[in-house]
Image 1 (cartoon, one colour):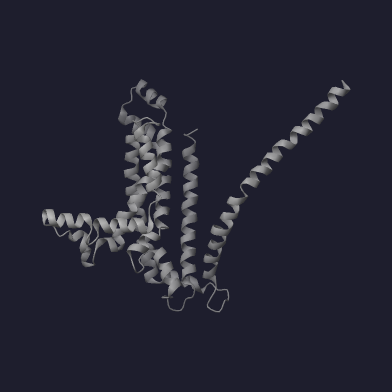
Image 2: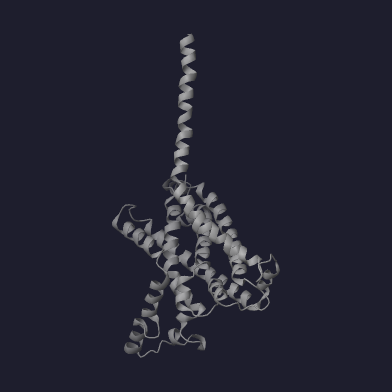
Length: 307
């Protein structure tokens, strides 16, 4: 009895060290990613935002925040908001329709595989390549523009002289077209898991109780999918709000906040205020934090039905 009792604690003690050793190995494996986040995300973000609190002499000040009162800055924030909101809503609706259509396909079938692969690629397709693709398609001498002119005799003024301000593609409203190119695939990637989380037993229970298909979608499926849908809308909004490369390739001057930051880095345009780029970066960071907080809350609520 004495041997048995004394052996048990020894075994427990030996086994107790294994979980902690595994945890230490897990943290060790995350070290490269942690270094990447700190060096290329955290430190640059802190430096960019912190620069907005120093004047031209390097003294700490809150006076730079007056840049938010500038009418041009306010107008560009408004432009960023409506472009991001419009592309997020349209992209979410189109992506949700595609997800609904994919529900009738096999998860490992050819069509689903092609759509998933294409969405993964197109969601990351942007910058100069995307801008060039649209310039070659609907630009002043783009493929569709020339085809409409030669085939139907249409001058395609909607593309070439939008609102008497020049080609649509090179104005702020024209950003909606290329932005949707990566917003819709992103919606498919983020919303499809929620659609797949709908259980067949819920539909069967609805039918057993005399409910119709309309009743199922309006009273069961849509309330369940709502947190995931609005969470995806927020994610699409944040994705569009922070996009820079495509807009920079199409628009020379400012007009949206990311382009304003570039402009302020090359030449300060707000009189009496220093480091405006840092102030604008602060505004974007605050907005992104609010968006990601709301997104996380909606994702936690949506995950209850995906277990």
